Length: 162
Picture 1 (cartoon, rainbow, N blue to C red):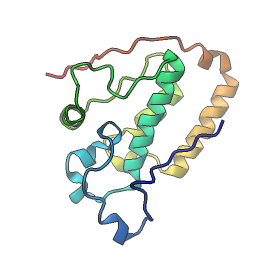
Picture 2 (picture 1 turned 90 degrees about the vertical axis):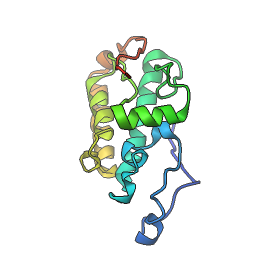
Picture 3 (picture 1 turned 180 degrees about the vertical axis):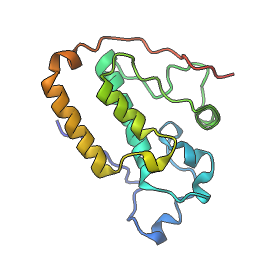
Picture 4 (picture 1 turned 30 degrees about the vertical axis):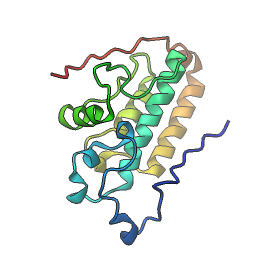
């Protein structure tokens, strides 16, 4: 029952020399921060806050799985997006994000949205993220029935893509 997240293919030491190579789009588009997709990495250096965005997508997956009891890929609720490059374009141009289930507990929804903030400097640091998760755990322990009452809720595309 321990969560382990790893990205061995792209991980590197946080040094100026290592980070200067982090200006090209790599990884899975659905998890990649929009500023990297938009080509802003050359104007704004890659930041660990880009990883926080990706963690937000993983948190979204956890919420959806806990609520719907089934696995859904990010952006799966948008059947018109069949290819990764379509996700890329809609994320950058329209700000499209996966739909957070309406029954997702408010503190968890707020955390996901913080991780997805359009301004990367407003996203939490890893240390802040751990503190928020600790607070969420306490909220769950104090309000277990409310958290556990999140019901199956079908996800549907509610954003206009035209």
